[in-house]
Length: 96
Image (cartoon, rainbow, N blue to C red; front, side):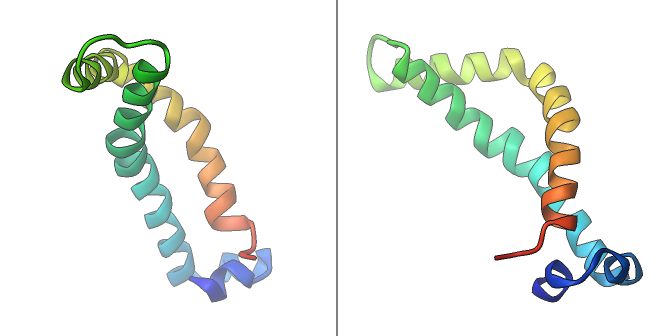
């Protein structure tokens, strides 16, 4: 993947294996990482910071409840925002 990230745009268009790797990274981010790792933690932390009351279990439950309520709206938004952003980040931007 490092070789693909350092390649020029013209070289990336010819590198099928590298493109497949970038597509896998985008798919992992959009269909696994963000909806099932990031958003549950986000809503739990948001509930904690915005003054969730009760025990830790109550705060976590409230955060996960909000996560479930917003799941489909968040999923649509992440595809519209992070889909193109991930294509740029994983496919076009060179690694440091």
